[in-house]
Structure formats: structure tokens, C-alpha cells
Amino acid sequence: TSLARYDPATNTLEQTDIELPGSLLRAVTEPDAEGRVYAVSRDPAVFFTLEPDGKVAELAPAQGYTASMALAPDGGTFYYIPDAHGGAWTHGTSLYAVDTATGESRVVVELNPLVEERYGLRAGGTYSVAVGDEGATIYVVLNAGDPATRDSFGEVILAVVTLP
Image (cartoon, rainbow, N blue to C red; front, side, top):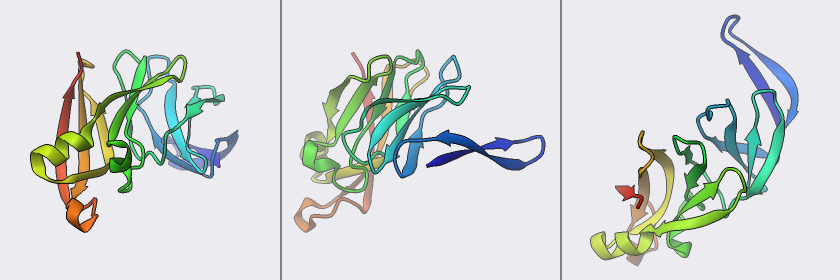
């Protein structure tokens, strides 16, 4: 996958020689304080950094197809839920935190058991993860559906995760 650069002054795209991992760029974070963005590809699902000078470095494998990721205000962590297109419930619809320095990930919370118990719905995935300005709250819009029909879509749930 190659990258193009947009020039707002001329309203043009310029092809670059920057090569990204994977066959498709799927999601990126906002830039951190140094202008670096964190991104995820598909085929394979891998997290990488893109520096302002165009340098690309692989960070870590993603746990699955990832459609949204959000960077904490301090730039030290980003959050995501893998298997965005309906299969997230098979691993608990786990919200992961990834250390941007090391690429190490940890599960913050498994949302599906909570959603199934409270609402009787299966949390299939997300296309929207956001971090509050203070960095202590993660907002996740979940696609959900009826477990009896084995559907993971049709309903929308906003999960608000408050970090300790």
C-alpha cells in the first residue's frame, strides 16, 4: 500500500514512495505531540507508526480486523476493539490498550458479557472508539444484535468505560 500526500494550498494529491504494511490502511489515530500517527493495516492486521518525515515502523500485530482506534491525550496508549465486523463477541468484545512505546497490549475490559447480561444483545464490534479529553474515559459505539439469531448488528450501544 502506498501513501499520497494532500497539499491544501493547491488542492492536489502527490504520490509518495512511502510504503505501508498490509494491503489496506484501515484506521489511524490523531497525531501525537510530535506529529506521529499510529495506524493499523489489514491483510495482515498490523499496527505501525507513521512519523512526520514519512518513516514507517511496524509496532505490533493487531488481534484482528480493526476499524477504529483512539490515542490517549498523553500519547502513551491507544485503544481499539478487534474483529470490528461482527466477530468481536467471540473474544468478549475486548477493549485493548496498546503501549505506544513497546507495542505491548492488554485487555482493559470485555464488553460483550456486560452487554449480554444487561441488554440481552451480542456486541459484535465497533467502528467508533474515542478517548475523552482527560484520558480517563473511553467511548465505544458498539454494533449489537440478538444472540438467538446469531446476529451482531441491528442495534447500537454506547459503552462508556471509565479507567481507574
